[in-house]
Length: 126
Image 1 (cartoon, rainbow, N blue to C red):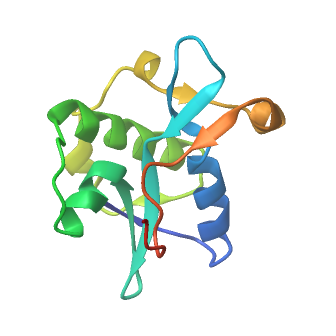
Image 2 (cartoon, rainbow, N blue to C red):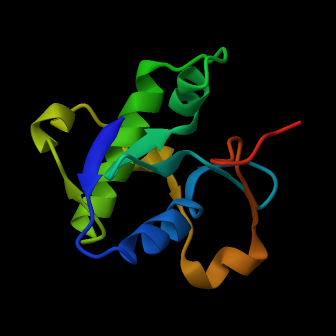
């Protein structure tokens, strides 16, 4: 998990919405699979890959180095855009994935895509 700081409390909702538009896209259809979520725990905020959330829940997950690198790239992007401040940027360093591995969907194109989450924070999946 990558700890981040928010400048204002309403930034949480901005980051959460932005993350719904960042992930991995399908090759043949306009589907975007969300890679990361923002987690708020005990007054602290973290950018977390969805596979890390499975591990936190005690479920099986095939989290790999590339998943962590994508999470780090997304965290760095959020920081570059001024949405978050990284608590420990030195931990990310060069441990990032190429931007070509990540699809960033502009807000105006959101309605044209199917946005898919593989983990839903706070909801029990059946």
